[in-house]
Image (cartoon, rainbow, N blue to C red; front, side, top):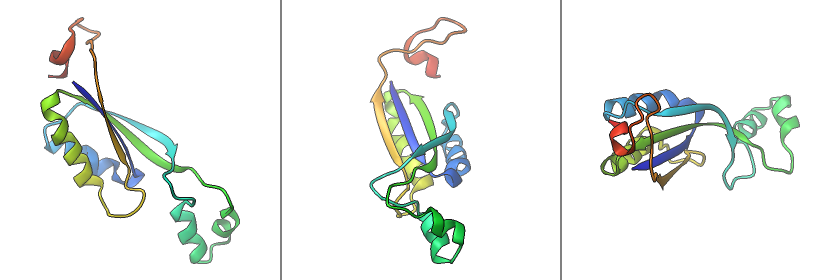
Length: 125
């Protein structure tokens, strides 16, 4: 079993949910309000606003890095579905620009369905 965690742009969450459902992956968890940043030192939305002359954006530009709102999706799948999920998330989120997100794949040692007490990969079906 694998756990796939994807950090994606806010505006890509609905497209990602649709893409996963169309790929046959109906079970996942999404967290709405996460903050993060990559190597970049600026929130590109603020930079864009400053370039357009918005004083609020100009006032926010500073020397330090800013945290950017993102969404986090967690998917647990059997090993044979890992590549499908990763490829689906990439296709739904790839714009070719900085900030497209990150995907992390980790092994799951065990899992339990609370309602029935079932263990292992059978709970993912």
